[in-house]
Image 1 (cartoon, rainbow, N blue to C red):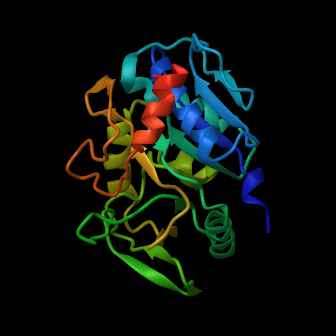
Image 2: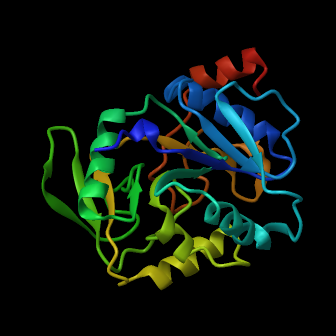
Length: 252
C-alpha cells in the first residue's frame, strides 16, 4: 500500500488572508509536522514569510469574486497528475497531534474499497448524532480506539470542504464552474446522493482534530472556541496555551 505521507496536500486560499494563513501554518507544523510539504494554492503571493515546507502556487489573477471559486480550482486540479490528494481550506486549523496511524489505515481502506473520499475529522455532534448522515461500520475494520465507517448513499455532506483525502477524478466530477464554496457543498452533495460511490470516515477517534478558525461572515475575527454555526458541533477548540503561544510569537 502507498504511504499517506506521499499523498500531496493542497491548502487553498485567496487574497488578503495572510492573518489566517499564519495561524494555519503554525498549528499545522506543530501538530502535523514540518517534514510534510503543503502546497498553498492561491492568487497573489502572500505578503508574509512562509515556513520552508509551505510552497506557494498561484492560480493567476483573482477575478470574478467568490463565485469563481470552483472555476479556478477546477482548472488547477485538472492539471495535477496525482490520483489522490488531501484538500483543505485555510481556516480549518489543526488543534492537536495528528494520528497518522489512523490516517494510514483510512487511506489503505480507501484504496482497498475503491472509495472516492475519506473524511479525516470528527463526524458526530455533541449529542452523538452523525452530522453528515447515516453511516455503516465496515466489517473487519473495528479497532480498540476507532471504527472505520462508510457513509450511506443519502448522507447529507458527501461533498465537503473539510479535511479529506480525495480521488481526483471524483473531486472534479462535482466541481463544475461558477460555484462558491457553499454551493459546492450543498448543491454538490445533493447531486452526489445515490451515485454509488463509497465515502468513508472514522468514529470514536479520527486522524485530525480541527476547528473552523474564523467566525462565519467575518474573516477578521478568530474563533478559538469551537462552533461558528449551530451545525458545526463536530469541531474542537484551539487551546488557551496555543493562543498565548501564537500571541507571544507574533503569529496573531
